[in-house]
Length: 335
Ligand code: 2RA
Image 1 (cartoon, rainbow, N blue to C red):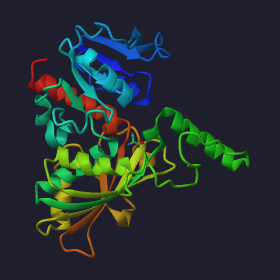
Image 2 (tube, helix red, strand yellow):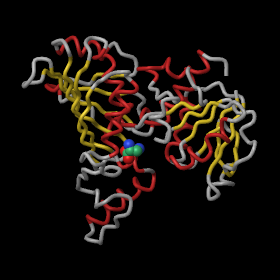
Image 3 (spheres, helix red, strand yellow):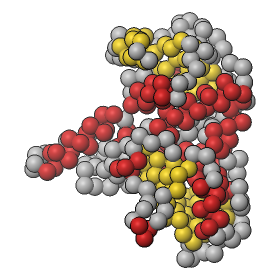
Image 4 (cartoon, rainbow, N blue to C red):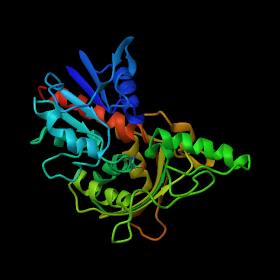
């Protein structure tokens, strides 16, 4: 089983190496690709050194079985044919193919079987905020069809990449020493601030990030579910949080929802307010699961349930989900 990682030098690329190692993914060969700038860098995987090759339009993917790609939409669009032309399956972390009808958009806990239908040999990894949310929605949908979702996201700096994480740290230092705060990766200073603007605004007043939560959730859940999102950047390093309100067809109890969460693979319930037990990003970075808490009936709607969720944006929100798709493929499809 030959695996390629494209974009290995980025935050997600580095996490892909860690996840493949930690899960003992059954690869026999590994090849790393990057930009001209990253070419030549050396990374270690299971005590063996691998040199990054520059991604080019050639036959480098001839023997590759699965390519894990996290290098931006432009690179994915430009190199999809080069990556897949010899038979490799491309698991793409960019938004390039997510809404393509011939490309499955997959969260294994929710719609794994969709990964087996790949007319373009491409499987799209959803946006991190969508992944985290649909994992928490699936157990509720299994109890009663979800009609509406309102969600506010509290998105960490890591969503904008490793440079953005470093910028946040520098901004905190600069703003506490009275120095001028350097702002580059975000529209405004993020330290001690909240920015209700991720990606670009569309004609309906929602941002592209917010419309991803609407469009991707409907595709993944094969549902007419209505999603209204407000996506906010917050001064947190690498775990996203979401405040989610759900309306279901039938009235459900908190106990039913809690039990469904507790029995669902990939979810951990942290919900005991009297003991100050609820998920927080500071303590859950690096974890694989989606953590849920603050589960309660909605005061305004007997068919409404509100809850809070936290998950690591780089792991389950990107690298882990992609590797889980690859694991599903090798368990269910000869590759
Ligand atoms: C963000 N979800 O958080 C976007 C892309 N990772 O910036």
